[in-house]
Image 1 (cartoon, helix red, strand yellow):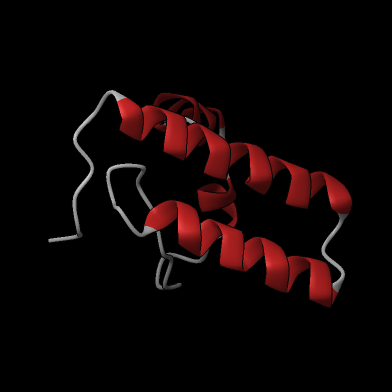
Image 2: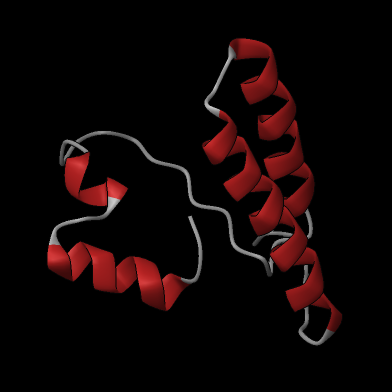
Length: 81
């Protein structure tokens, strides 16, 4: 959860969540460019709180949603293709 370049570095180091996924495991990636992304992260936050996700993970998601909204101020968000 964070910047694409940081996640790519973690993949190379074997420390990414993607390194823990099975090769045939479906995953879902949201980009800040997607107009729906921050709202979807905020829905995940609400569900995470309801299901008891650890606070550190919830706070990281809150920060990410905020960063997505900030990024969109100077970039060109759009609906997904």
